[in-house]
Amino acid sequence: MASLGENISNVLSRLPEGVRLVAVSKYHPEDAIRQAYDCGQRIFGESHEQELRHKVAALPDDIEWHFIGHLQTNKVKYIAPYIYMVEAVDSLKLLREINKQAARNGRVIRCLLELHIAEEATKYGFSLDECRKMLAEGEWRELGNVAICGLMMMASNTDDEKQIASEFQTAYDFFNEVKAEYFADDDNFKERSWGMSDDYAIAVNHGSTLVRVGSAIFGPRVY
Ligand SMILES: *Cc1c(COP(=O)(O)O)cnc(C)c1O
Image (cartoon, rainbow, N blue to C red):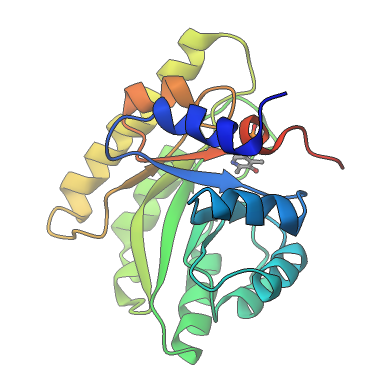
């Protein structure tokens, strides 16, 4: 079996310039994260508040933690002091709460809007029309303690690479649409978070700037 360091180098070698790796460490122990850290990895993705809380306390301060899972509004206050980016903002209500808790901590928290493009009914996120409507209504402009930095999505869980590619492209086209309409003068709005272990090689051909890779680095998760 390849070592964790080899797995990271292997993923990094397949990322074009300008695409960054979010190492998804959920369900993996602190020592695995430390190994990745010692190989130079600094961006980690987690999806459970309590698990993340313990890891943050035990691991170095210069890690950039990305919250990539569904975030309940009542959990926002716990991550607001330190979270680098909330990747899966799937409602205006959640964005408001992040703004409120960021203000309490004297911070501006980076956020990505999560799109629901995949076919699975269970996935969270805005449909394209819901996202258009939310942006058109404009309340987000008044939320001074969040910085909307781009979009995030997951492709369908399928072997059909054409479908996966077409979903990433849909997200990329939508990014360009909203960038032009709402964020043309906003340099923060530049991130496109798509691609996971099984499909990041496709995602980077469709505009990804952040890939969220877990099992290809850390091995299978133990649930
Ligand atoms: C778990 C997870 C990943 C990583 O999945 P792998 O298939 O292990 O690479 C990426 N994004 C999100 C939102 C996740 O929940």
